[in-house]
Length: 198
Image: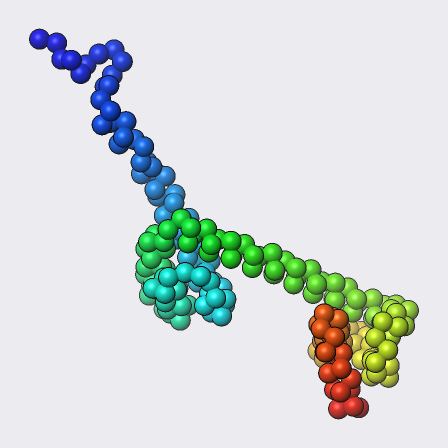
C-alpha cells in the first residue's frame, strides 16, 4: 500500500514548515558571537561610561566585575559569563546598548579631531611667528612673555632632544583656551589664574 506522505514533491505537512521558521543553528551562533563581542566592547570601556549605559543591573554587575579581574583564565571565564548575560537581553535593550556605544565612537572621533587641531596649532606656533600674533589677537588675556618663553624653550627641547616639558605646557594652554571658548565662565577663570603663573 503506497504511503500518502511520500511523493515527488516531498513532505506536505505544515508542522515542518513551522520548525524552519526559527533561526538556524549557525544563525543563532552568529547572534551569540555578536552579543559576546558587544559585551567585550563594554568591558573594554571605562567604568564610569559602563555605569551610565541603560541595561539590567545583573548584566552591568557582570561587566563591572569582569573589568576588575586581572587573572587571564578568570577574565576569560567572566567574559563568557558576560556573553551569557547579554543573551538574556531583549532586542530593544541590545539596540539601546549598541546606539550608546556608537555615540561614544562619534564623540571620541570628534575629540580626536579637536586634539589633532590643537597639535597642528602648537606646531604652527613653533614654526611661524605670525601664529603667536594670531593667537594673541584671539585671546588678548594671555601672558605674551610666558608664551614666548614657552615657544623658545619648546624649540630648544626639540633641537637638543630633551624631555618636552615646555612643548606639553604649550599644548595644555591651547587645550584650556579651547575649553574656555565653549564656556564663557572659563575665560574669567583663566584671567584669575594668570597672576599665579607670574
